[in-house]
Length: 256
Image (cartoon, rainbow, N blue to C red; front, side, top):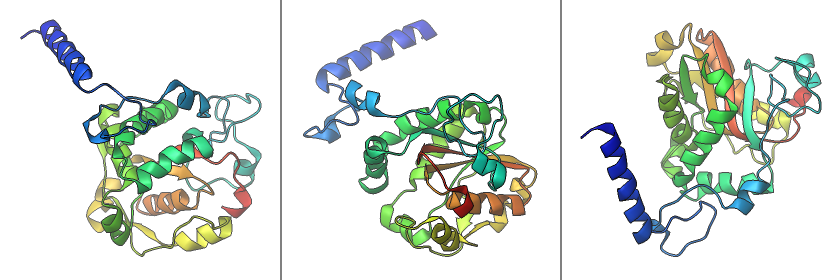
């Protein structure tokens, strides 16, 4: 079967499936959702997402009011550079994006991963062309047992595959459990994750000299991502960039 015929057959099959199971948007509530094809967001939900486009800070990904040129950094990143090299975020973390992200984290909505992967691939396109490997921020084994999946890994895996770079799923580990970061200020978040991350012994040789893109869901103070970046660099990583679904509008860099 040649390629054109194969594509025609596939389109016909999808058309028939659409008749049997009408596509629904990811943010719609549908009875019997297990038998529904999920596609994108409704126009209303899409228009409410505050996507981040240039100009933005190269260091932390915060939107900037003015275009200061390539590699420009906000005052906070100039005063206190983060442990990671650059950051990108697909959108702002607000009431609209929060609902979708919490569904992924706590409501078993892994069907959202494809959408978030596309968002991050767009936001971090300039970083992806210069990395050797993609790695997720790890969950502690007890939290992973309770949640059954790592939401960062569910995004990092297809992102690496789509970019054609290596995927290092278990390079980073949490060597101790930490309390939830929710509700903690910058200093509290930093202390909560201090020394919590390390590169697994079996991965250390593979980490050395490589450029990484770290994936997480939300960047708030940056404490977790900085902890992971420090662990990778301590193991010899040449560079560590980060990419997230969403970030808070402003970070207080002095408290990261």
